[in-house]
Amino acid sequence: CDLIVVTPTFFATFLSPSKDHWKLFLALFFFACLTYVLNRVRILRWQTQVFFSTTMLNKCESYLWAMPLGVLAAAFGSNFGFRTSSHFAFGLFSFFGHVGMHCA
Image (cartoon, rainbow, N blue to C red; front, side, top):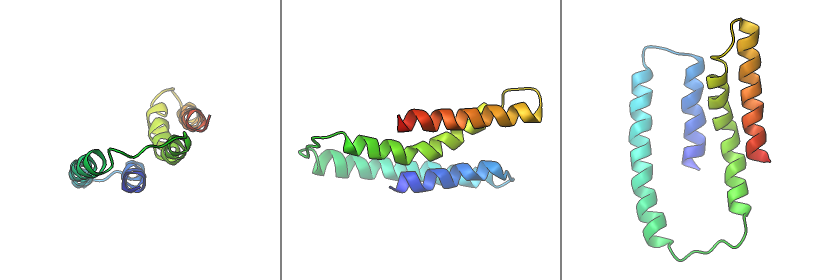
């Protein structure tokens, strides 16, 4: 849940760039390292015998990651095109295409 909440907040800063982005990148790097260590201990050592019999967890995770990764896809897609309207169209298409693939 922490990764799903923090990542879109971090990527939202791309909409308003500033000279302090290096602090945010550094904070996210340390957060990712801490989360990795915690998950290695908690999931791989404590919950190794847990069995999930359905795909419900995978579907829920896919829905939760659709929005932040869709914003990232829109940021990438908006780099294509020659005019402002085509930048917007490519970004919109990338966003909805990515979210649609997650929810399919």
